[in-house]
Length: 127
Image 1 (cartoon, rainbow, N blue to C red):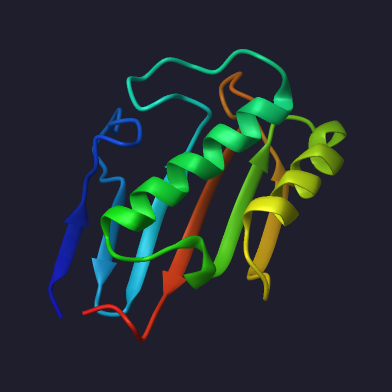
Image 2 (image 1 turned 90 degrees about the vertical axis):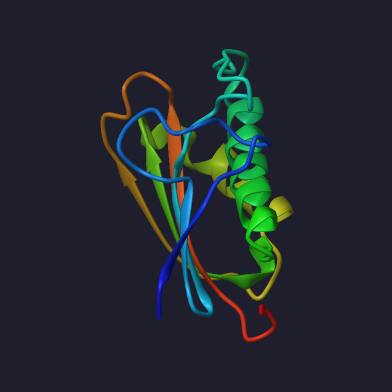
């Protein structure tokens, strides 16, 4: 099955040698998204707004490929501080449809942006 790169103007453009997502058959692999608007401006308001922007970016890339976050089977969350876990988890539960996918959350250096999230999606409904 050929790999199909996904690119949308409704999410920030890649800043390096990668695609926003790769579709491989019924799977969609979403690259990590940070809290930037589609025009590349970093959301520098409170952490809640950063989390909402990250999931909006993921949703927009998924939509461009014919998927949605309801198709998520694995989500990885990278937090600069685990002090932000409760805020992230609360918003995650609002924006990620149930049944929730598997998830890993780790604390790491994300370059001062606070949060980055990547995901794997699967759907038997995509053509």
